[in-house]
Image 1 (cartoon, one colour):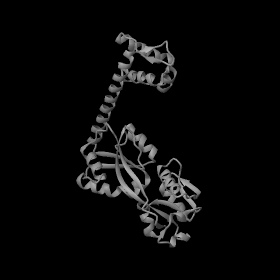
Image 2 (image 1 turned 30 degrees about the vertical axis):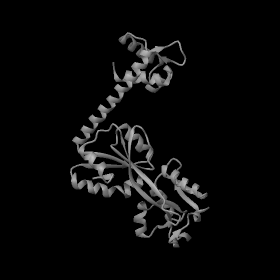
Image 3 (image 1 turned 45 degrees about the vertical axis):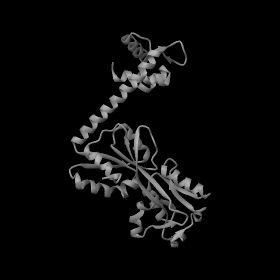
Image 4 (image 1 turned 135 degrees about the horizontal axis):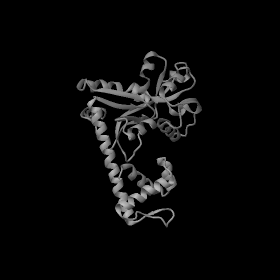
Length: 293
């Protein structure tokens, strides 16, 4: 009895269709049916009530389904553990971060980590949030760093930094002379923002909606670096985390103006797959990110 056969049985139970299960596993409907029949033959019991549509499990089938899920979960934990041991043996931690965190916040934590683990390589990839969730869940990335983290029963989610949000504009823009600004002043301004699929975009949209503010979107990008370049040439204003524009503030290519209506922040978080087995160095790095080391 192979683990893949158990996966097929679980998918058939959940999809209630031989054809859909076959498509998911690149098998013919007949091949799926034969594998289920073989399971029933081995265990000398009927798992499916084939007379009903959609398919239903017999009591034996329900029992077998719950056992299969448990076996598959434990097998995935085993794979994760073996992967962790393999990675720890080559002294490497794989981290994926969104651009703003990876390029502007993470470096200081890596430097602190290297003081205690100078021989462990922290490999950092800059990816969008969707890719990070996908790779963390697949076990290919040890630690993910995202903005506006979402809850998922398969993930451990920890708070990271709360980043202050500020109005960002070109030094040539009329608002650049303000020391503080009422958020209503951005009403109808040309706005350079993030794409609709970016969590930070939804977060900022929510802030604007709370104040009944409408802006004029002129450009949308999937990463903060491109947003900053557009604002530098005075294509429009934006609202960005202050930590991500420190270099431009120092060089004078961007201006940041605080809001007088309150301290608006963007939450960020650390995500790890729940059954992920990390090396001692990996656990220490997470504690460092959580400021508990």
